[in-house]
Length: 263
Image (tube, rainbow, N blue to C red; front, side, top):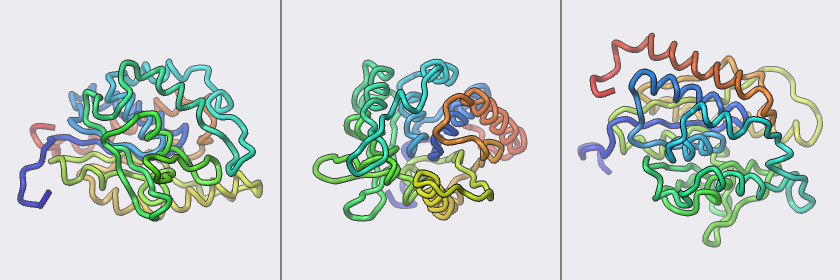
């Protein structure tokens, strides 16, 4: 689509990766709904891809908390002895069960784009069609922590490796784009375990690659208050949700006079 052609959608929302911090996205979406703002198109990476497909399927933000209530990382992933630390098929099944009757991205009521990384070619990629569970699992597959996911003969890993905020997937498709980054980086020192080193490395990559996508957005909201929450710990998701809600309300209040009429 060239710059002179009409854009297909009015309002787009792009949601970053961030593990359990991704529930801040659900809170932010609730604040947007209360302001009368619903996306015509939505994009997500990693944790943002999970929230994106649930929202596009019609699930209310508060209900996203309910389906994960009582869940633990160990109930969604199990220790893996082949090529990665954990195996993620449990999460894939959990996601499918909560997306019924939808199984493919193109079936979702709200057009949805999922950002991934083509592990074989070393380039960013996107999906707007295909099996939801497989594509979202690929978008969540942090290297070393999880194995790559093969789709049509190509291996894919977490979209955050190259673009932790998927603004690039829908910038040319919408008039106004809101980007939400739930992956701020703490300055604290990381531990020395394999998991600590892997996650710190991944977070540094994410920090380096998301600035360009933030700049693409008409409104970019960074949720700094959730930086100290562990990305694999689901016990504090309600606090994370509330923080995302409060941050988005504040952002909208500050910028209300600059939002276009249709937004």
